[in-house]
Length: 410
Image 1 (cartoon, rainbow, N blue to C red):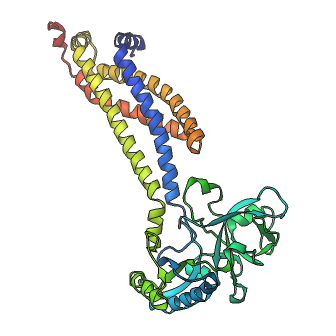
Image 2: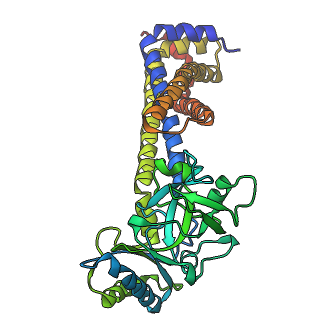
Image 3: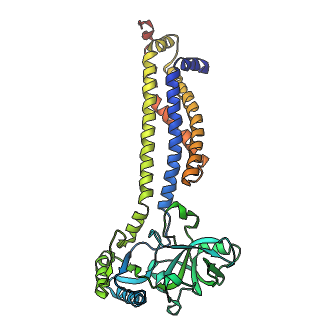
């Protein structure tokens, strides 16, 4: 049976190397646990559904030039009618924003107009009766808007319209214990209620950042056309026609009215481009954290291999003596594996504390979620297995040392 005491005595003689490897393991564990947690959060965010049927969707941002607010509404209606006539277009509508766009309106919702605190935060999408079909949003209760309910309004003096469609997430926050369909609610500081006439399964807010996490799926659709010279058009292409309408739709808009500007990286985008740009930083962060993890694990493994190889070289005569006294190759192999395991255990105990402390610092400074202990336990197992795997090659070399080494001079 392998004795631990001789191993501890040997480690005591090599304090500096033992401490360095233990600290390296501890630091690697602390960083890897938090990095893997960040990667998981970012990947989860990348995979969040928007509530749209994203294929075959095209978005265009247009700003009229030299047009007063009074003249915007007729131009927008004319644009939408022209877009619906373009070959390859299934449907289209004008709006202020859409999921993952990166900018839009948000406000609080209340059940009591005099309440000081909102019941829930939400985004506002101003749409018409063609919006649900164009977006591919799934209506799970109630009905869609009709053309007669769509109003024209100045964004500076907008009043809440009588009807609204909300997402399931918002409906459950407003009315958690009863069906929300047919119930009133208030937007912002407006004292005029809107009645929920429909509920859609999901619509994501325009923002992908952490600040919108608490109301990510809270959205209100209002039957309003804003008299603003800035307009966003959502267009659904017929299957297989997206590439064609990406070229023909802008031409149709300029043909309808040349007094406009369509520029910038958000000017003309398929929804695949919208999603890619919205989560560009999250994807980059996940890749960066993954590279950091791999580099740290490789450095730690290399350190363990190097230190163990050095120790094997120093102890060849001692190993030869043990072999001459009857120790088997398996005994020598077990010795070095156990020695490394003891160093690893000290390292992961320190590292677990560092990982939790590092996460608490990130939570207080960067609004991160608290680290799950699952990641700490997974990191502990990973580092111990990595250590045992790294020490295996030099340990096997040590086990092959011949008993004749005992008779050689040092």
